[in-house]
Length: 212
Image (cartoon, rainbow, N blue to C red; front, side, top):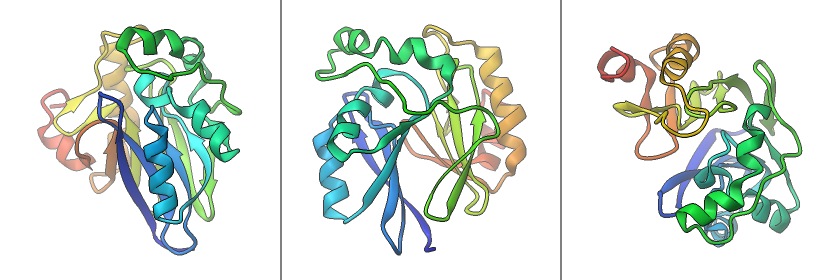
């Protein structure tokens, strides 16, 4: 097993961080949150000889899950996640796409929903599943303990947190998810988020105005 690496492909007009997690040695990997622009995602996989084994979804918003079915059909791989509480959002992606002008979005039917405490993996890289509602009811975070890394989706950003004014959002629940599940993992945990640059939990604990 080689080193875990990540490449980011900004997709949709929301510049969502579609993330390709992969092993540096055998180039096996997964695609996290293919919200759209699937031709671009496929090109990055091909150009870097990465063999995607699954699609992992953090939550059911259009910019994160809108292209999942197209990518599934292109590669013949499963869609895993999020938590089943986001099924109403996944069932409404086509309408979300029309509302925001995202062409080609399709309702998403995961092959497997996830719950707190499960694990998902590719190669030898194992990720723990943390159910972190607040931004969306079924939002999950993927945490790799060995690499001290988490993909947090839209739960936490550098200097900010996920919006909670969308259907199913709740600010108090979001803050509890961050303080009770993410920050206790340790100050040295690095993260990739759904938009903008990532960071480390310790820096957010100390300086994020929503958490201090």
